[in-house]
Image (cartoon, rainbow, N blue to C red; front, top):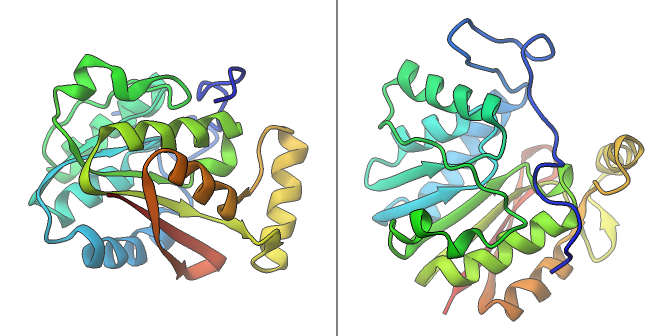
Length: 226
């Protein structure tokens, strides 16, 4: 795994930039577009499962609260390296009545799977990162995959959602422009090649299971631990 940037070098939500409330809730501009199709896709994949799920890079916490309510059989644990995000995650859970799960302060590029507090959750049913890989250095993607290979139970799934390149190609001109804008903001950011993630996954003991097309030229990549 690359030793340089960690997940502290990621895009951040901030009051005054995004809409916010006095209790610390932040509003993602893509939540309303992303959440319904993601919940539908996750229902087919893990809706009948039980056990702990770790969400990496939960951001505002809107998705985490929605997922916790949509999948009551699962024990949904959010995480984010940013304390402002973690405050928003807690505030959204309180606002929506989701189970109170204090967000872990996880640096996804580090050895998060070896942490005692993560190990105390038990083998994970799933690891999810939504809209994370393209707004962080590639070391974060490497760390998510490597950690999932260690932390998932047999049959557990790694789920990565967002825009990706496939076979070197962008899925639409909008994604090409989006990638160019990201790299202009930070050369370490950009849309990741999903075939490269497949190779990382296999090295971590995870087998590619699905690449589900999603709205707005996004994909839900699924890898399963044998």
